[in-house]
Length: 64
Length: 147
Image (cartoon, rainbow over all chains, first blue to last red; front, top):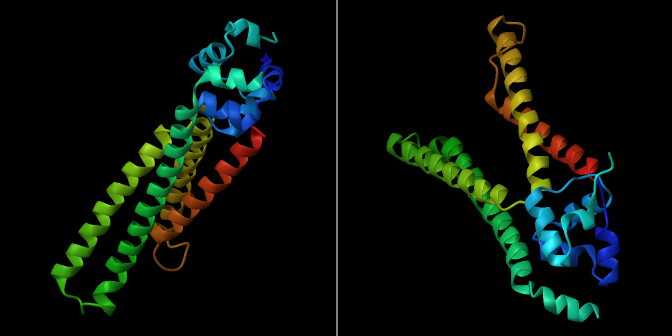
């Protein structure tokens, strides 16, 4: 699954640690999600969507 | 701009809470584990070196060791509950490996003992060592997978 977390984070000048703190996950988890190695759960995706004031589909895209 | 957006997030207290909780949980597990290990040594070596085989003190030391073990399990449970979803997945996989390897190796080791293939009785400490190493390797491999 592709996502725009890295871009959205960069636009706000946030570090991975900042985003991790906002989403209450570890920095390693943010890194794995950004690289597409780990797919977040629906609650975490909703949390990210609320944080960036966007829809889930605007942040995460299915690669299939 | 970024500062304004950070302000809008208004999540500073939560971020400290999660990080703080994680550190607190790790320290709690460390303390319970240390106490359990010390009580294990006390229960094992106390009868011989400290209280000259006095049964009541031996039972007390073993009871203390058991209770501290229960505390350690509870501390570990809280620690795992507070993990994020990727950490939970890594630990779930490592625990599955540990349980599976522990079961298979333990029973094979027992068979070797029962059939007298190995000299001397099978030691439970060997199984615990295998499980500990398996858990460490599985966590390491699991963590590397997501890097």
